[in-house]
Length: 253
Ligand code: 13P
Image (tube, rainbow, N blue to C red):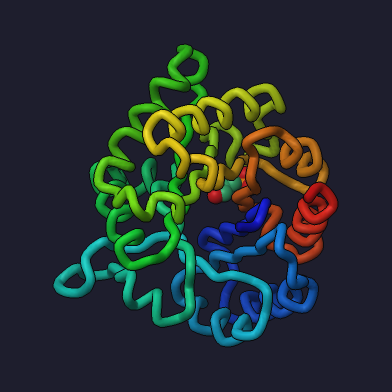
């Protein structure tokens, strides 16, 4: 198992040409490294193109969402088998943008997580509190509630394939990351939650930090105990900034 996962969530950015350019630049610089894995998650429509270009590279491929049913009358949705056909390994679920703008509930996220594990892919489950919740002292209550429901259907035998991304909502896209103390405290709490529920498997579950992670703060944040990588939005859209974070992880590993 690698030490760090450095993941780019491209969100609704990059057209086909931009995807080709970014993927080519990243795959040219990613090395075979046992300790650091690079992952890119382009928009659905650019996954086939990215998959083709990444075939013999050291960059892993992921999606930003999926539906839990395999096929049928679910207009506009994409199934896990459809994604799996493109050598894709990871699927992000429960991102705060999907929770907030598309009304995704924890019950729906639980079904997606169950289905992804059952298809032998790796879910990246995003959890995190809003600023109001943090200011009201409810951070850990919120995280517990999200984890309790989101993980309620997970196959315990496959749980170590799961990745958790702690993304405080107020730190996403704001340029203001959580402080080192806030990251340390939340990641420690999540690790303890996993240990209480999954015993020895807990150590194998990666916990990523997301929220204004960039080349300037990557060194400090990635060095915090229980931080096993980053889920990066804005700074993953330019190869230069994403590679700086990736290379920082290599230095630290
Ligand atoms: P930013 O890195 O742009 O803050 O986005 C983080 C994020 O939402 C990753 O999923």
